[in-house]
Image (cartoon, rainbow over all chains, first blue to last red):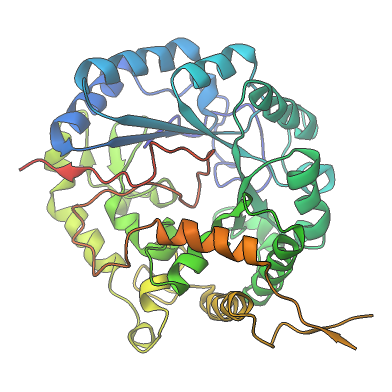
Length: 356
Length: 59
C-alpha cells in the first residue's frame, strides 16, 4: 500500500485528515517508490498486490503511475502483479480511464450515496458538494468498461437514506460492488462526533441493506459485508480485513517512507520501520511488526467463547474499545447480523415481517 | 398476515458459489502471509487478478 498522505482536492468534513494541511503536495519520491517496488518483489514470491491511495492519489499525476507500471514490469518480470487504487473519482477523465484499462487497475471510488448523503460532508476545496464530479468520474470509468467498487461512509445523516442510496448505486449508476464504512471519529475529528454510528444503528442499517439486497435479487451485486458474513457462515475465509484478522498481514508505506500496519493506524507508536534506510524485508520481519501482530490477535476472553471468533476476528483492530486487544466496538452488531443473514440463507422464520 | 422474507434460490446460489471459491477458514495467522485486499478503506472493481493473491515470503 502506498499513500499520498493528506494531499487532496476535497475537504470532506468527516476526514481524519481534516485538521491537517491538505493542500501541501505530498507525493512519495520516485526513488522511494522504485525501492518499494524492487524490495517488495525481492521479498515475496507469487502474486503481488499494490494499493494506491491518499489523500487523493490521482493528484500524483498520470506520469507518476506510468513510472510505477514500468518499475513493476522491470522488477517483477514474469510475476503476476495487481494494482488497485482508491479515489474520490473527481479527477477521472478519459485519459485516466484508458490508463486503468490498459494496465488492468482495479478502481474503487469513494461515494456516500445519492446527492443528499454525499454532499452533506464531501466538499470541494471551495466548499461545494462534490457529488456531481464524483458521479461524472464513475460514469467515465463505466464508458471505458470499468465498473468500480464503491466505498460509502455511513454517518448519522445518511442512515435514513439507506433505500435511496442503495437504489442510486444499483439502478442509477448500475454498480455491482459496494462496501460501507461506519463513521467513527476516533477522537480525532471531534467536530463530527455527533455523526458517529452506534452498534445499534449499524445493526439496523445493515438489516435494511440486507433486505434491500434480497429485494433487489441481483446475483451479481456484491455487498462486501454480506459476502464476508456469508463466507464465514459457510466456513470459508471471510477475506475482508475487518472480518478475517488479516490486517496483521498487510503493511502500509507512507509518503515519507515510514511503514505502518495499515492506513488507519498511522501513528508514531505503530511505525514498523523506515523504508528510506531499511530494506523492506528487514522491516516486515522485525520485532515491531511481530509485536503488533501479537497484540492484534490477542482477543478479549469473550471472543474465545464466541462461535463467530474465526469469522469475525474481533473486527477492525483500529476500532476496539480501550486498545488493540480490546473488544470490537460493533461486536453486538456482528452477532446480530451474522444471525440475521444465516437465518435468511436457511429460510428461517425470524425474518417474517408484517405484510401491510 | 405475515410474509416470509427469504432469499431467492439464484441469489443464494450466487453468494454460496462466491463464498465457496474462497479458501477454507484457517487457523491463526503467523503474520508472515499476505492476502488479497478487500479491506476497510479500499474497494475496487471485481478484479480477477487480486482474488486469491497470496504472496509467500521467499525462503
